[in-house]
Image (cartoon, rainbow over all chains, first blue to last red; front, side):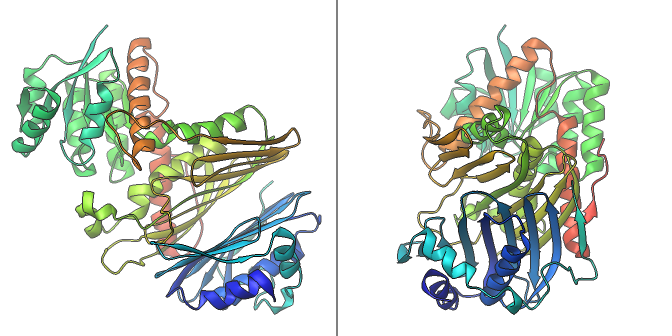
Length: 154
Length: 342
């Protein structure tokens, strides 16, 4: 990882206790599995190993709600779209990070917001595409929790 | 016709109700009630209302009224709704409507038996930025909605104005999530399944203050509803609800700063949908204050026309059912199906 995503991982360590991560991906590829796997891999880089608790899919969308054993929650929304984008929200009990769809990474602490990286959308997407989805501790296509449900909702 | 109403509960939010009633020309509040009579008198003095009571029954018996506006906390809702229903007085009741579904059903039944309308003050549906999102969906700008995220994350010190919140065992879902779950129904229709995770982040509070909810809707759509009272952003977006709805033909998003964006096959549209600041209001509350005026207007329109309010007690039972199932899902650590609430 380089650029905005690498900085995201580094800065995550300074947010205090991490409790929430939201990753939103729009991918031009019809098969949503690779992007879903990369998003889970990114969430695990940020929060630690995740148990895939809930996964829903319908044509053009995948939603995953995953849980770290420390209580932190990751939400992942993957969508098929002509225009690709990536956005990440990460909340800690002392500060928060926001990577917006234009590739701008900001650190917020409640009294100020500091721009950390302004790499542009294309660079952020290149970073994301370089993530190895196999690095995810869990197979993104298979919910492993005893409570997991994997059923198309269409 | 001029509708005469009474207001019960002169705490934190009552000032917004009274100021908003002044902007509804065919309604007026003629008396106030609070168990702390001093509070009622202080508010009455500020709003030129001389008749103040410490007992709702005494007020209901003494006043000739067309409706009651209940702005108390949830514990007193059932007894007050039943008190007014017994006198065939229509009621508009603050949220959360009921502690549980049994109380909610009892209030709906009492009003139905009396043949009087009952509306829940579910003001989020009346926030103009959120209505703008709904309008874009209803115009077909993004096609059929497939997925959504409804989010409300902040660190605004809500405990200053409402200190009781810090000691509530059921905090964020009951106080805020109830609005957002109602919005999920409003945008995507009824939910059939819920998976909820809760956390307590702020050590000063008793209940959950960070929540993630995944909903399956009967339409086939999916949604995330997430909210936090301990997310340190600058500027703090409180009290803005952020919404993103993805459809077959595009996306509509309401971002911080009341920025509405529609991206569809028809093109891109960017619009500022910030509501006006009422003459009696102030930022950052203007979004909510404006919606109070709008929901009051809707209530009087419904009384005049004899039609059921959009956020009737019966409708709100479905939102209450989601709230109960959210807590049950969080406690069980697994998704649960949603049964019909009525």
